Image 1 (cartoon, rainbow, N blue to C red):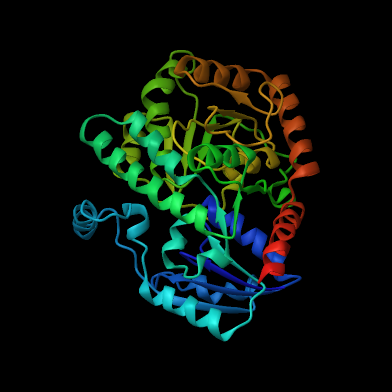
Image 2 (cartoon, rainbow, N blue to C red):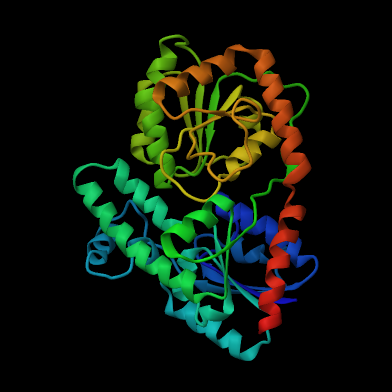
Length: 396
C-alpha cells in the first residue's frame, strides 16, 4: 500500500507516549509499504525531519513553532481562545500551510489510505471523510475528568473546553471513514459519547529493548511520564500531597524519582520539600530508572487512551501500582500483573506491600513480563492496524 500519514509533529526526539506508539508502528509499516509523512516541524528540533527516513519514504515538514505554555504569548493565546469555537488544545495547532500541503498531496499522488494521527491533526486534514482517524485518546473524556477534579475558575475553564472538545471530536469521528482507538474501553466510550463505532488496536512494547539486566538491585518508587502533560502533573501532585505522607509515616527514607521532560516549577519544588524525592527532568534513557526501581507508580486521576508506560514497566520487570484510570483499557489483572488502588490509603498500602515483599514483587514481575512478551510486540500490534487499513484502501 501507499500511505499518507499526517501528524501534528515529527517523531524525534521521542519523549511522549503517543510518539512512541506512532514511531514503532510506522517502523513496522515502512518495512512493507510506501509511507509518506506530512507534519508540523518545530525549527528548534531539527532531529525530527532528519530522522524521518527511519519510518517513511518521503517526508513533508511544515515549519511551525508552538507557543510555550510558560510564555506571555501563551497567556494571550489562552485569552483569545475564550472567543473561539475550537478548543484551545486543537486551535493552537491549526496550520493553513500543513492543510494546503496535504490537499496538494491528495491531488498529486494516488494513496491507498490516509491516516490522520491524533484528533488534533484533524484540523489540518482536508477530505477527512476519506481518512482513517487514529485516536490515541478520547479527548473529551480527558477534559471532562479535568473539570471533575478541578475547583473554582479552573473548573469553569475546563467545562468550556470539554464542551468545545465534545463538539469538535463528535464532528471528526462521524466524518472520518474509519476510527481506530487504542482500547476496547475507548471504543465503548466513543460509542456512548458520540454514537459512533470504532475498531481497537492495542498498545505495544519493545520487549527486547526493555529487557532488564541480571545484576540490578532495585529500590524505591519511580514515575515515568512527560511532565508537561496536565494529567501527569495532576497525578504527581495528588501522589505527593495525599499518598506520599502515608508512605513516609512508615518509610521516611524511601527514594521516589519523578522522571519526565519539562517538569513545571510546582513539580520541581517537590524535591526541595522532600530530600528523598528527585525530579530528573528530561533523561536520555528511562530504562535505567525503571530497572533501578522496586515499584513503578501510575497515580493518574485524569486521562484517556492507554499508558505505554505500564507495558514498558512490565517489559522492564518493574512491578506496578496504578489507579484504575491509569491502567484503563490495558490487559491487566489486579494482584497478578499489576496492583490497582484508587484511594490515597490503598495506593500507599500497596506501594509499601510491594516494596517490602520480595516474593510478591518477583511473582508480579514474572507474570507481567510473560504477558507482554506473549501478546504485545509492535509487530503483532501493527499487523492488526494494517488489517484495518485494507477496507479503507479498497474503497478509495
